[in-house]
Image (cartoon, rainbow, N blue to C red; front, side):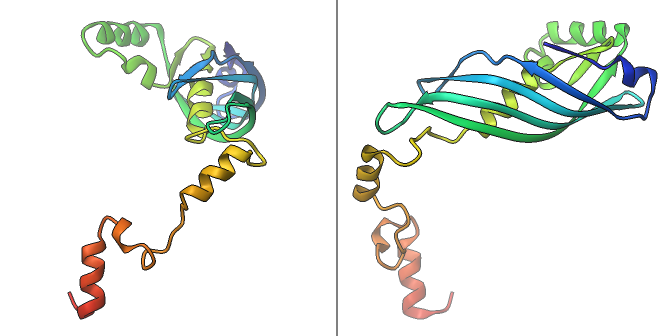
Length: 181
């Protein structure tokens, strides 16, 4: 979806508030499908020269399945952002597209740029939301399956109690014997 920034183009240097609703398609992450609902971006935008600055907050709810018990999980996401988009005229945009078709594939998505008076925010919303996700979605409070997994595999074991499980255990033993390196 597009955000109209024509007021900033007309009044360079002045800051304007925005409220933008967007949609993020379902994402396949580590074999699980995660959906996003109620994607809302709010904040302020301003134009300085050819740089459009957007700063604000993205809020959404990610829905997936618990990695331990497979029950449905809803995770509220709130991310602050401060991004700059480069304003291009039609000639610059055509030149960029020509470069992208000459072998530099995939770079267009990495650049934050726009032409005209509207900015596409879908890619930014997707990036912010996915980067804020944890490695695994888990029930909150922890489900019985997650409690059982934690009991079987302690995650914060002291190195001195379990020296054979530490990747540098041989070096640790040398240090405790000589205390000099």
